[in-house]
Length: 113
Length: 115
Image 1 (cartoon, rainbow over the protein chains, first blue to last red):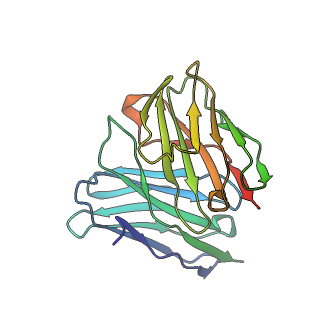
Image 2: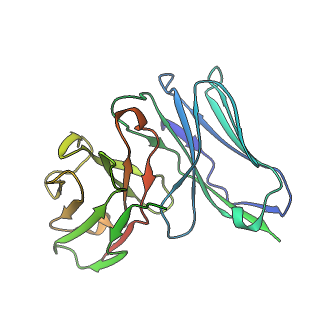
């Protein structure tokens, strides 16, 4: 079992839909949880960064962490065609020492006009 | 807006040849990372530098890969000899300081194809 599991999709939704992206993990030492967006042929771009359990909102994006279930989610409200990309979850167990991020495989999202 | 620069963007080589990739992190970022991303997978860390020192190279195949950051600024990743299985995207990332290890800023990557 990989440390981080993420459904690769692809996921196709109509414009304006609410999108839910998820990752599960097995390492209970993970405390820092990130979501990156990666457009085709580009490097990943940090979208959301959360510590421990709880919710964090930034515009149309909401990140949720449930450490008891080892489950994290990213919600995108009012999805736009420009949101079409691959979304990668990433996690780490340390905040102030080595920054070894463990990534999921990524979920490819397509938002249709 | 400051960005991580990488070159070349694309590289095609034959197996057994040597290849080198260059990265210039965001100005002032002390920590630099090299990742490899195989198609359909997430990035995997190869090596991490703090200034000019290697912090973690446990996943770097040292028989053929080498990395350096001589002056603590830009960095070079080399593969010699390249193998077919090295075909991947090589990503460079940087973060500001020891406190911000999890906030990594990625460059556009170098896509390597080994024939």
